[in-house]
Length: 162
Image (cartoon, rainbow, N blue to C red; front, side):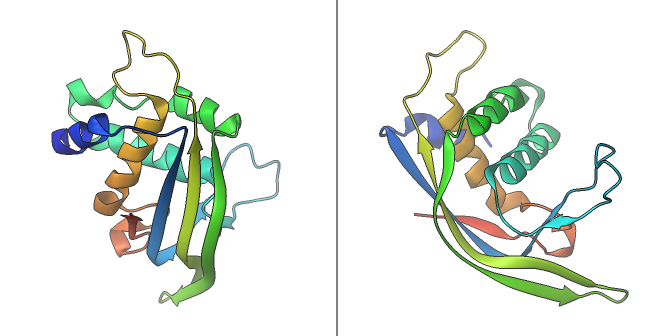
């Protein structure tokens, strides 16, 4: 993990940074919530930034050492996404499904390209990575832990494409 952090810190980011993810196996996002308003759970079949990155933040916090867990800050990432700092600029996604013993699971495979828009905010004493560096770190992490629902079953295999 230290190597990933150092790699991201060394990057010189342009005003708009491109991030392209390949979703190599069926990917979907379980959108179950107690706030669902009675509509019930559903599976999101698009890699929208507000589905993608908060889940990766949780994975980072689960596996990072105590001194590294704070490098990625969910509140800053959510605010950046909400303010349209991350936008989808291109995609080649296809619907896909797998058949489990008891049910089919719907999702997608393919690629999605995002722009991480700047400028970067001022660094604070509590943060050693800018929000865009944090997102790039999470994109690298996706290769190791997967994205979305049922990653332990092989779903959500993803990798950063350069």
